[in-house]
Image (cartoon, rainbow, N blue to C red; front, top):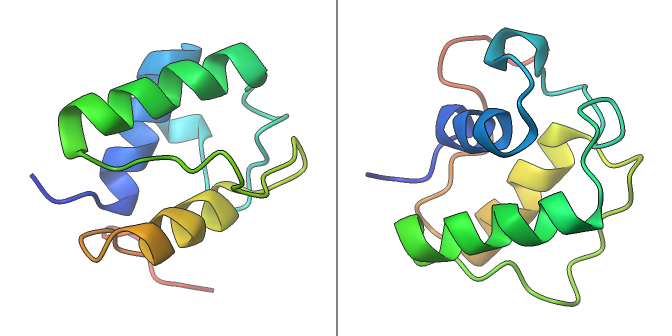
Length: 90
């Protein structure tokens, strides 16, 4: 399964317990209560399910948006899609 925006949101929802519908491209990691421990869990899921290594030097702060996260993943994986598949980019 390719790593798409929707897949990233699904994984984030599973890791954080936040409803997928509440996660938007403009949501920040802080908005979805993503702390460093959850970020590690997210990285493990990405590696196990999709073979994507969330680099240690990835510059993500709690103020980073989901769009920033997906963009960073897109730069690391040619399978990642930057834009959501169900909503038009604004």
